[in-house]
Amino acid sequence: GFSSGQSLHSQQEAVRRVTVIGGGQMGSGIAQVAAAHKHEVTLVDVNSEALKRGQAYMVKSLKRVAKKKHSDDEAAQSRFVDEIMGRVTVSTQLQDAVGRADLVVEAVVEKLQVKQELFARVSEAAPGTAILASNTSSLPIGKIAEGLEEGQRRRMVGLHFFNPVPQMKLVEVVRTEEADAQVVERAVAFVRAIGKEPAVCKDTPGFIVNRLLLPYMMEAVRLLERDVASPRDIDTAMKLGAGYPMGPFELCDYVGLDTIKYIVDGWHKDGAGLKGNPLFAPSAKLDELVKSGRLGVKTGKGFYDY
Ligand code: NAI
Image 1: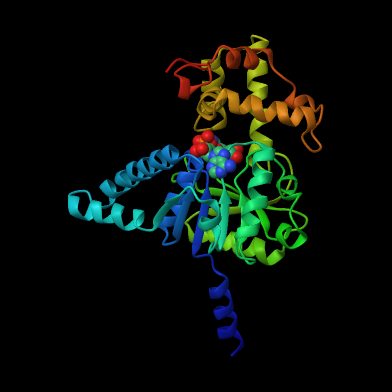
Image 2: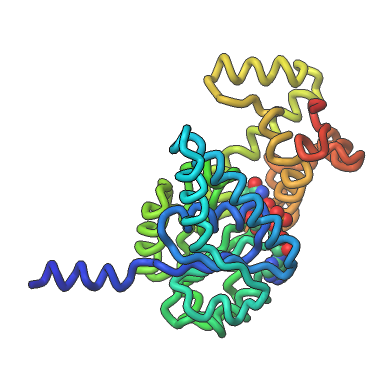
C-alpha cells in the first residue's frame, strides 16, 4: 500500500555512508558519533598524521564510554571499541572517499576559499544524490556553495556540530534559500539517527547559538575593559545568578580567544548583514590577549591560568 511504499522510499533515502572531510577536533568527533550509530564512515584529511591523531582521539573517547558501559568486563570494552572503529576507514584520497557517500560533511579549516575549492572537487566525485554539508561556524553556507551548479547547491546544507561532539547534543541544521526541503529533511533525520537533537535555522551569520553567544561573550569582555568587575566575579555572577554552567570567561577560554576574535572580526568587516555592527566591534583586551599568545585552555593561559 501507500504507507509501505513510503517507508521503503524513506529507507532508500536514509543516510548510511558518511564521508567526513577534515580529521581534526570536529571531524574526528563527527566520524566517531556517526560510526557509533551504525554508519559506515570514511574520514579524510590531507595530512595522514592528522588522521592518526583523529583515530587515537576517537579510540580514547570510545574507551571512556566503554568503561562506563561495561565497567568490569575488559573484553566487552575492547569489543565495543573495535566494533565501532571497524566501521571507520581513513583516507587521504578525496575522490575515492566520497564516491559512494550518502552524506559528505566538511570540517576542514575555517577558510572560505579552502572550503569552496573542496566542494568543487567533492561535488564532482560524490553521487548525484549525496547531501553536501559544511560544519562551518561562521561562514555563510550559500557563499561556500556559490561556485557549484544549481543541482549541487540544492543538496548543500549546514550541519553545525558543537565541541566536544560526542558530548554535545545539539546540531544546527542550516537551510539555505536554495536547499531542497527533502534534503533538509534527510539531514534532520540523520541528526536524529546519530542521537543528536536538530535545530533548523536559516543561513544567517552565527546561526542561532553563536549569534547569541558571541555578543554575550564580547559584552563580558567589555565589562572587564570598563573595570566593572573581575573575570572571576563576572563568571560567578552568571553561573549563580543566571544559572549558566560556565561563566563567559571560562567559556571564552574554552572556545579559544583566537577563534572568537577570528569570527567576530570577520563579521564586523564583511559578515553578511553584520558589517559595522557594534556588538562585534574589536576589543583591545581581546586583541592584546591573542597577540601575546594567551588563547585560553589550549595554550594554558587566557583570561585564567590553567
Ligand atoms: P582542526 O584544525 O582541528 O582540524 C582541521 C583539519 O582539516 C586538519 O586536520 C587539517 O589537516 C584538515 N584539512 C585542512 N584543509 C583540508 C583539505 N583541503 N582537505 C582535507 N582536510 C583538510 O579544526 P576544527 O576545530 O576541527 O574545525 C574544523 C571546522 O569545524 C571549522 O570550519 C570550524 O569553524 C568548525 N567548527 C569548529 C568548532 C570548534 O569548537 N573547534 C565548533 C563547530 C564548528
